[in-house]
Length: 144
Image (cartoon, rainbow, N blue to C red; front, side, top):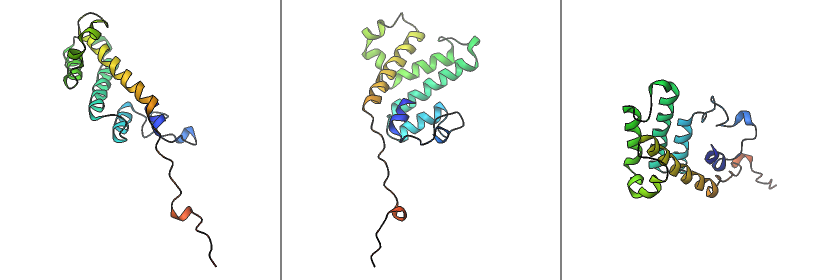
């Protein structure tokens, strides 16, 4: 949400903000992820991984008593998170500092570095430029 609010021009009215509530065009986590990618704020890899994280979150939200990080569906998604970046292998010592071996701590480690990356982006992201008035709104001057 912070990435979007930094990238987009401020809404004049909170009721007209495109991400302010669930019924807004960018009200869902999925649509926000897609918008960030299409605006060039996140890479294709981060886009893919945020959707995997969203699916894990949804799995736990809809079936919390039947799932854990060793459940086949969750485990496969956690493994999928590491596939492209291979960040677990490249940073074994940092991963060990997060907690014992296991999918839960692999997940926490994966979420952690992605949050760090996104939080750094918040500090440097530039807002889209404000649009100049279109032709018909400009005072072209009356030359008589």
